[in-house]
Image (cartoon, rainbow, N blue to C red; front, side, top):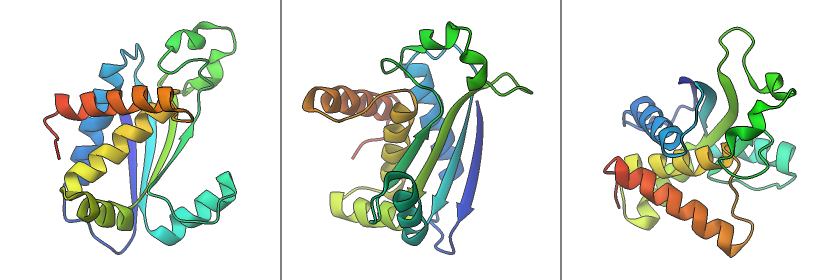
Length: 166
């Protein structure tokens, strides 16, 4: 898996964020039985930048903890068969052949505030946000209670598989 991580904040987390992002992203891909090598981009940034991105792409003028920008138009979450049709070439990097899953943006301030609010570590909060976003990149959502329960269950299992608990 090719993961490009950009850190655009003067606020340093002081945790091995690259290692956490990589192991959670890989475990989520493994959990979903993704048959491809994949590429994602992860931006760790501040609340101001997250607010800009949220306003620009979702038309919501507020900060948020994580934004997901999927590249694949999944019909159903985790159904990689959509990539077998004749249009699927647009989902793969022309040079590497990696599946272009999409981009993730995470607020460093939200990692801190939510870890404190939920009474767990910065590592666990970052891992949760990455797992959450990875499932969005693989076509899952939480628009209704049923979808939310499915997605939450998958996130929990990925974190449990890695021994990352509250």
